[in-house]
View 1 (tube, rainbow, N blue to C red):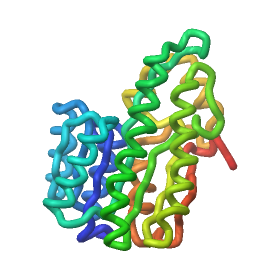
View 2 (cartoon, one colour):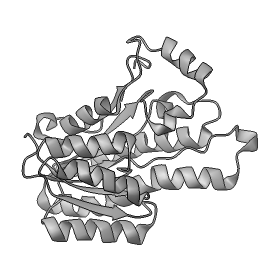
View 3 (cartoon, rainbow, N blue to C red):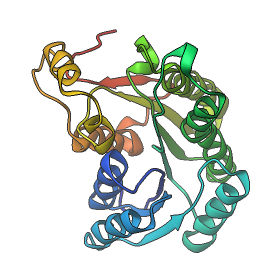
Length: 247
């Protein structure tokens, strides 16, 4: 119960990595507020968190809308008195080659994937700075490190998260607030199920450990970065990709 007494907010918690992170944080002892757009899937995550015996708050919302984000953070702080952990996980894809990508596809991905990280980080930073403690964990992607054809918007959003994380880490370190990024590789989720089978095989061949990742692999790392065992780690980008990318 390394996170006992702590509270957390997790975005994109309606499935996949977000759901696994929310459940893992709760199993480690944290109370968890979950955010997402799909009410039905949020309810499923809420059930998993509640089954651990921890408190849970659920917010169906637009994570790229400033007022909604601030209201959510204010409500969590009011109900639980503190916010110790922020996991920015919300993400979408709208793939397409550069010459065919619409402006709306670019804006939608940047807003959900990157703007939401800015909005939530800014909102929780005020709380964490007053507490003089806190951990922000941003879910990026190895695509933000190496790029990928047909994913200019997605790679830009994830690369932006990486750069943003480093800046936030430098800004908040004097108040004992840490910020780190996780860069997953090929993780088995609804999002990656959409990738054509031939491309999935090609990706598998490029993974030294010879398997795809599980949402729980990312969740385990998120718990570590959220807790006191990582108290001297900030501004870092940790790839969790089975060796697909080695820095």
